[in-house]
Length: 182
Image 1 (cartoon, rainbow, N blue to C red):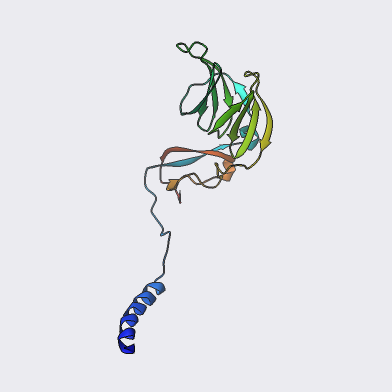
Image 2 (image 1 turned 30 degrees about the vertical axis):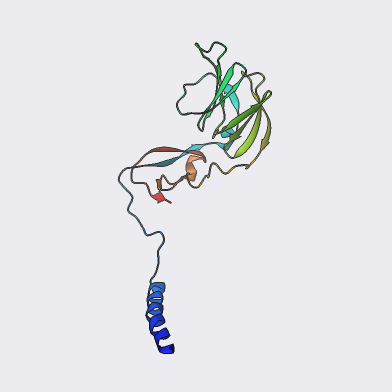
């Protein structure tokens, strides 16, 4: 009985040992493609990126979440800020302002306070005077939405160049011979 036990286990053991000795490279080197859709860093100053202010109305390019309060509609412009639109006359909506909030993805409103993300921070903005919004509170590094070293998702991306400034976001675009991937 012992002989048949070893005769079954021995070949299996040899197979396991053979494969365990083979070097395993989880990330083999790859040749960058000539052209591919991937992320590129958006450079800026963190001081500027964390400044929240009202500006003139902007075109809606990448509209996101919508919130309606009374006769005003608020719509996220992904990564850029929040559109403020009067819907007092629903047949003729009128853009009132744009609130610049870098990295903005979500929002909620309670009374005259707008809660949103500014890059990785949770911010509270007083919107009582839409032409002159005021940041009233900030909790830093609440979220992990923007990584200065790596874009969201996987695949090829444009390597970060620290000499160009701080990474304040990532955008999808056509890349030529990108050197970084994950």
